Length: 104
Figure 1: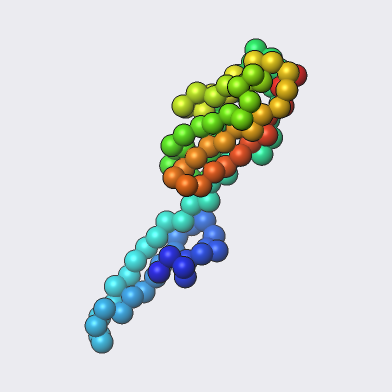
Figure 2: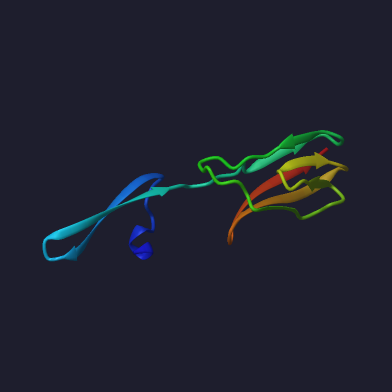
């Protein structure tokens, strides 16, 4: 069934499954499409909390590609440390969502 749900838009999807000749089972799936702000600019010494929108699920893990430019906490708070750029990545399971950070 997951293959037939691909490409579904955010919201609810109702699937009908025939279990016997005259009985049916209705399955309601809530479809979420998480998004992360694509770009962020911060001055050195400032911080900002990033959140995934379009989902009720919180990120399992947050990562920063350059810890000299910035750091990120397990709650998604990004702190700018020095001038440079970094990619902030939020993970939900095996899916990643990236925000390009520019520090001045």
